[in-house]
Length: 90
Image 1 (cartoon, one colour):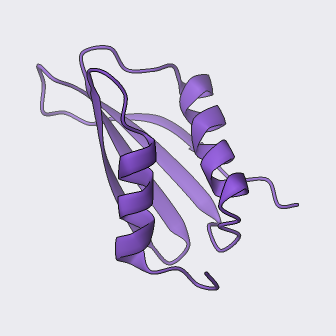
Image 2 (cartoon, rainbow, N blue to C red; image 1 turned 120 degrees about the vertical axis):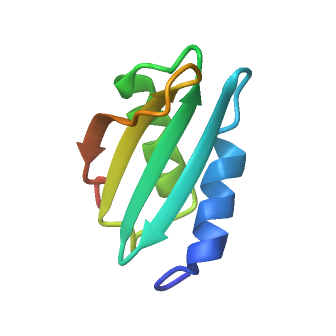
């Protein structure tokens, strides 16, 4: 993938980030991936960054320039900014 198809990128992340009790909603626009993590037990920011970085590196998604992570606990509708990071380029 050179530039990335927004639909394909979001489907890949949503599928690969599935865990018990946690759902994700992913958006991709102009090189920025936004991931909303929903559930009762949200993984730590470090674990999310590690997993997302592994996906980007393994699939060679070099067109992704920034990742924004938000947390949303099941009992609230509020989004909590969790972490922003720029993927390492190899």
